[in-house]
Length: 100
Image 1 (tube, helix red, strand yellow):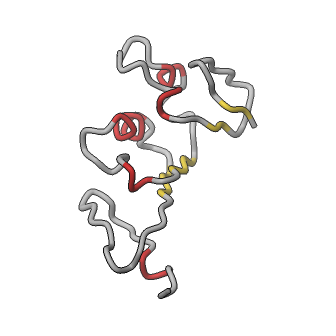
Image 2 (tube, helix red, strand yellow):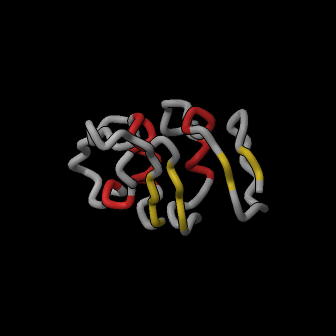
């Protein structure tokens, strides 16, 4: 396992940890995530996915679309009193969250 920092990519690992800020320069020619082929990953887990990755214009969304062949699992924790509404996400964990 390796953590991607300073936009340095070492493709010899099987598990990668990264913040989207470490993967993008907001410049298509310099984005670090583009060093991987679009089908490089089988699974991408997005922590705190309610914080912006679901938004159509987010930086994370661009990365997720690039790796669209991978299975994407979004993790979030949210009160049942005000459930988030993300029409672009098709699966919700709300039925599995116990009532407080």
